[in-house]
Length: 467
Image 1 (tube, one colour):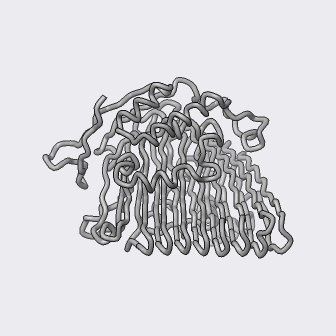
Image 2 (spheres, helix red, strand yellow):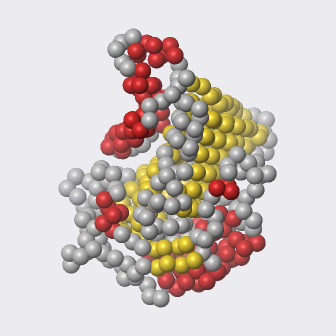
Image 3 (cartoon, helix red, strand yellow):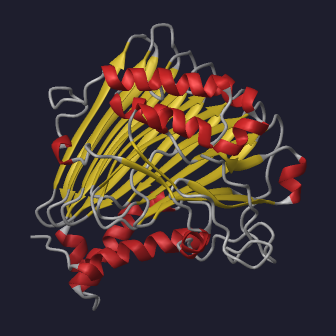
């Protein structure tokens, strides 16, 4: 089994000779043999081979999560396609580039909106590029498999050091750690700063099969980063997705991570994401979930030292029979740390959302400020479960949490209708206003406009039934 040659792909998805750039296709069953096959395919260093083997041993020992576990009891895991998983690395650069939002431009374009970009399709890199200003500072946004050969020591230092991004967290993380294929590596050296955001896309077409992407982001002391990561898929049959994201913000760093999820209607996803924030570092984490049949997210921020600051904001618009289940965790491990979480969900038709949030303040973490709010807006017969929580083990803190579940305000609807706005349009305006504080956190205007259009499209697909 040979390793595919690295190829540069231009903005049209073509290689330098004018032909479509293609890597050798790899198809494997998800088993122990695949662990070795993937290491051979990517010519991985010995430490990564050993890490994969150890993770597979965890996977074989562990059971799938059970509904008796608090974090899983509201998600029908029995409906996930857990059997007969197949790994297919079948890059399709043309399809990958066609699926990009119109405003995702190469850094080499005449009017770029990004400083660097990497696009993965079906587990393989289809396109990557970075502007000279960022490259000169040592900033990297690239395929994680290739980065193992250029930044191996750095990756090894941070690999799966998060609290929940470990092989033994659950069977899904063990599966990802053992068989991950396709990965995004972002590195910003000490004091560096790109002029514009970096962007990454993870995509699967109808050949994409099981998704096992791994993202590693390292932002060193005093550096600044804005990263936008988008996920899209086009499968026709039920598929499993098991993803991990690791973010490390070192002392004094400033990180904005925007996570966009637009999975296809047949994707069943488990995403485990962990940010670790050091002394005087700032994290702004924006999480947008719009796609997928069923989604289970674990989103955790660890505030590790005094001055660590974390803000998490998210929105979900669930329609039809979608189920979106999000577990968030804000850990205050040191004194004088700050966190603020706001998640807003809109549900229509027979959709269901679950929000399970926890603020944990460790003993000695005096001077902590921790806030958490979850607001849910119901349209139709949808159901929202909101379970915020606090665990306080220090006595000098300011913490609060709360949740709301409501329908559209009839007085507000009447006000708009009295001014000649049809009820259908009035409902859409109120929903867009409800979600606007989160959308405003997305850095590019064209992406904010795209999210507004997606929300409007939900109303065009099936008018809301608010009664």
